[in-house]
Image (cartoon, rainbow, N blue to C red; front, side):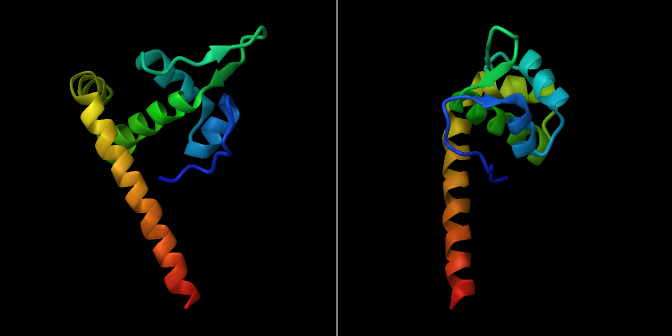
Length: 109
């Protein structure tokens, strides 16, 4: 999954949910379930997600939606092997980006 989020300091829950193509309720649920997601809240109580939160949400999305982990399985995996999983996940995402650019170039030929 490639997110279409502009680079910003903070993201609202609506734009985060839209980028992941999920409901805002799922984002709130994952926030409660996974302690690595810690959005700041403004005076009105609106969540403001940081780029670090987005990276963690991407990882959770990858484990749960793409690899089929249960929530408990994803939690355990994150606790036990977070750095290794994150490194592998980042490499995969970079390679997907390179592949997309190469395909784009190929299509232009």
